[in-house]
Image 1 (cartoon, rainbow, N blue to C red):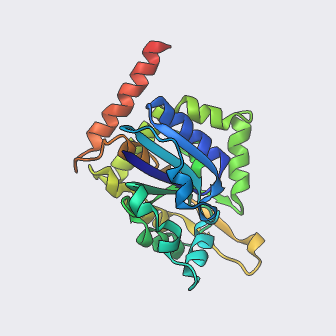
Image 2 (image 1 turned 135 degrees about the vertical axis):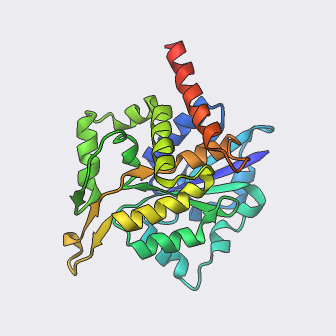
Length: 263
């Protein structure tokens, strides 16, 4: 049995997006509303799993932002083993799916240093946030935001409040777009190395200005991208070979063609 954990920053949006996408690939999904710190191993064992198939649990992380997550695990009374201790026995792969948001470069780098291997946890970032999925194929250029609510509001307005539906309806095209974009930026055939490379791009291109008054702090976003396709491809066993870019790319192209033929 292949059990995989998607640990998401948010709750409903991320869970709905991934549940919808994975079901289209015939992967069993188990969205759980509780945060992972409120669960115990027994609850996972009681789940009626599909033997012989891949099972993906989609669960909310300990905190909403990378900075808050780091503060949490820096607590001497908390350890990664306490948070993920059971996972080494139950989950074969773990992906932490987080937004760049207004996190400092050092926080992003520290978070990735802790979570860079899918067997113990790999950080997958979206810049500025997961809603960049609906903002694909547009060259926005440099944009300043005091708070990402404004960015998300712009996107929701563009799609008349149906942003999530748009993402679900066009998921394969979106994954293909960002896969090709990052391949062009990174020149790396092993997509499992893309999460590290996006960290470097984000920290180089996005500029954070921290003010004493936090409400006046802002980020100049210059890099819009995501690597969540890594979680999808890995869950589908498309990344077993080191040079896997073409295989993953062909998969999404095939999915797009199949959908067109059905329509």
